[in-house]
Length: 85
Image 1: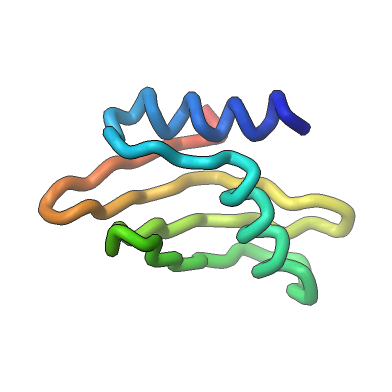
Image 2: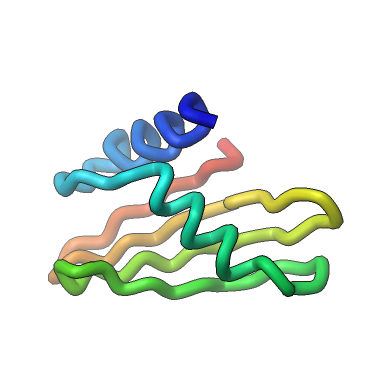
């Protein structure tokens, strides 16, 4: 799992987002959100302690989920991460 967390962090950093992120925390937050969700596509908004807004596009499947994209709004800056690319 550590490799998965690191991949999340690396993709976000590659987008130009300058702040530190924790891949494990992101994964845990998404897992908690989808816990009782039926299969389908969902948008999940999260606001962190610095008032940055993270908008996740998540596909929930029977035994797993796919984090498709993440859009981050930080002040007047926007960052887009495509995890499927």
